Image 1 (tube, one colour):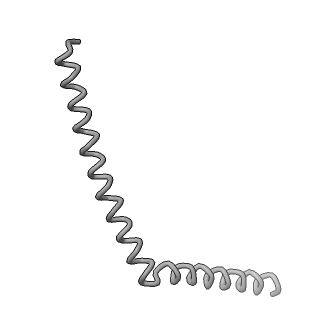
Image 2 (cartoon, one colour; image 1 turned 90 degrees about the vertical axis):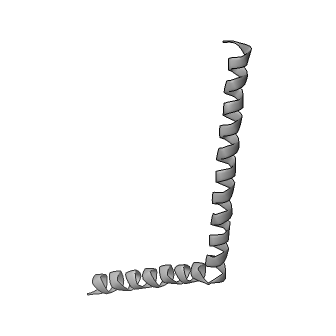
Image 3 (cartoon, one colour; image 1 turned 135 degrees about the vertical axis):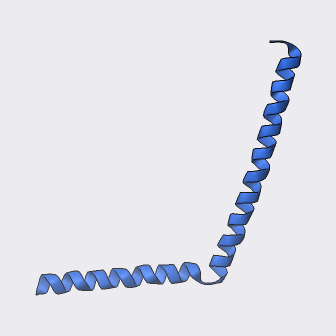
Length: 68
């Protein structure tokens, strides 16, 4: 492989890596913004409360089944 071909491949690799890094950074920034909105809207605490409520309901139903 000639030096020119090697350099061209390295340049193409550098460009591809930079493009990927830019897209990944944009994706991660969008995810951070989304998670901040969810956190501030109470979505996380609502989900946790729903999980707790479902667990209590399930335990109650099992207890009722076992005790007749």
